[in-house]
Image 1: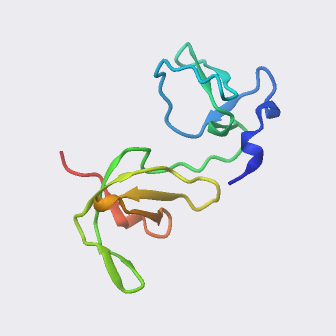
Image 2: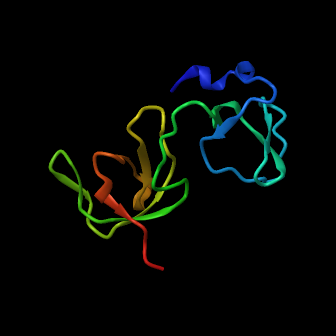
Image 3: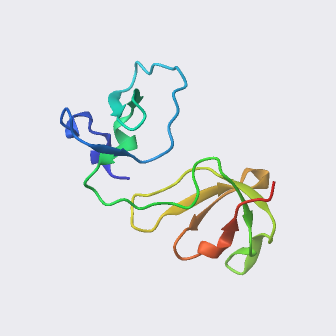
Length: 132
């Protein structure tokens, strides 16, 4: 985790920023947190974002294939130390996207509430979207 991502004063008024995760306007007002108002020019609206949800628009962006709460299906057996933890076709849900480093990781929640961190770039074949 990068502590500087939580600093409220790291952006100037009018500075372009990028949101690092999906956000939604759920109507809540978080009085116990520092919230920055972000004007989304392409949508013509404003939303409050926490400092850790933002990076400067000039910083490199590391796109991810999946987003928070996306459903995924294992294409291969997921093995740790020679043991199959989750066989092929096991469904899971992306719990979070970790973008702190160049290597994106997907913590995926599987049945029995076990969360497994799967590196996206070293194993892009690990997951597919489930068929609806």
